[in-house]
Length: 420
Image (cartoon, rainbow, N blue to C red; front, top):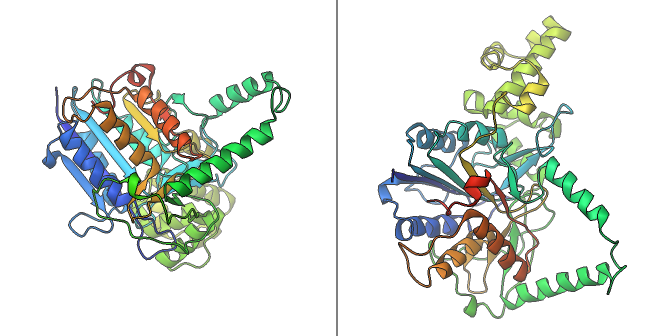
């Protein structure tokens, strides 16, 4: 067996309109789980958390640096793990082109320097054969974060959505059988809300969903296990989120630019972060600069500063289609993604009545791993990636959550144990 190494990122965005409560606790619990259950050495685990001054800040550049180091040193037999708890974002294409899901799925570092799905795809493509990279993203719109990887469980990619739409068309319409589909749906929604209230859960959404943040509770002690038996009363259910409009306002504050809109997010990121911006953003800018030059060379020189043009030209991309399709290469073979939800869904950030906060996906994974070993720690019975996601989906559904975690990997990796 080779080395076991991990990068864990938790971002609560304190003091912002997108503040969350459970992300640091997710990371603390996962760190302890990696050591106690999976045999990781403390020295092999890198943590980046925005409310922990003892760790590097989880900026886009720092996260990318740690992930590049993780993969660069990988050897056959190694087990690599990346856990992310924080906001996710779904960006529409600015040019009419799109990728496997129709959007850019991103994670949101503390400095808003987005890391995109294609960035993860290119990272995983560097993982050598015989080494496995497992990624858990407890964030909104996380389905398909490793672009072009086979979707084992879920309906985020176009291929799976088309297949499932055809299957639905083959079924009788709701209400044609015993009972009505609408009635059954309403019953499930009401039951889920009641169960959440009885469990004393306060829900925030880790992504784009309208809501407010009027009911904010303490995040609890980092690394503490939630005690659902203490959360019988006093809970509330609300939605607090990071709509695209909120992200734009945060980006305006960050960059000092007040002309940021949906159609200029990528150019704003490039102008502000430069070489530290997402590689996909830099490729996009190269295409835009080339278009400007083609349309009007003199106007282009006034619009794009020379430094911006020079940096953009370093990117080896020649068309918009190339930017969104990504480099011509086979799908990454050695990556496993467990997403908190589908691309068009949100992931919940929950707080119990006694102030204990966590991500719904992260908590479900910890609960299943603990139960799978019947109380044992290291050396406990292994659960496969497919089994874990199936059981997590069942657990979250029973708890009243609507998010549907997904699994993205090869057929072989779906049958392998989670992490190692």
